[in-house]
Amino acid sequence: HAPLPEELVVDGAPTTGHCDLTALSDLTIGVWEHSPGVSRDVEADEVFVVLTGDATVAFDDGSPSIDLRPGSLVRLYAGQRTTWTVRETLRKVFIT
Image 1 (cartoon, one colour):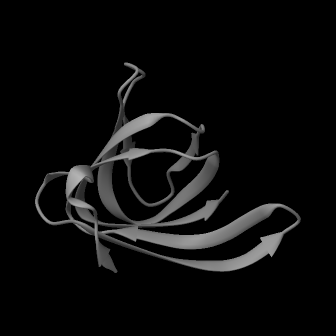
Image 2 (cartoon, one colour):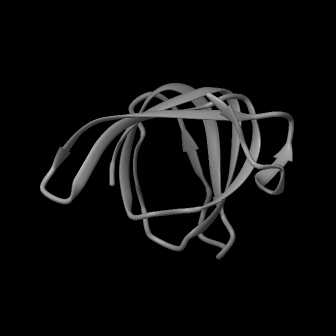
């Protein structure tokens, strides 16, 4: 894990970490974690499944926020601006 850049942190002192597991064609599959806290991000095209944790991702464009819990399946689109509120360390498997 590494601290997030100060300009991305909204509240707390969240850290993130990831491990790329494999690549298939032009896709990457990996695991990503975010510790408790609130941060902003600009998304890449991604599909993920939550393994552990409790969080909410809100979208700056006014789209409905998504509660994230184990088993949540989510599709994010490149360029979406988001705010991640992580209450319990979030771990997900992603495909980008």
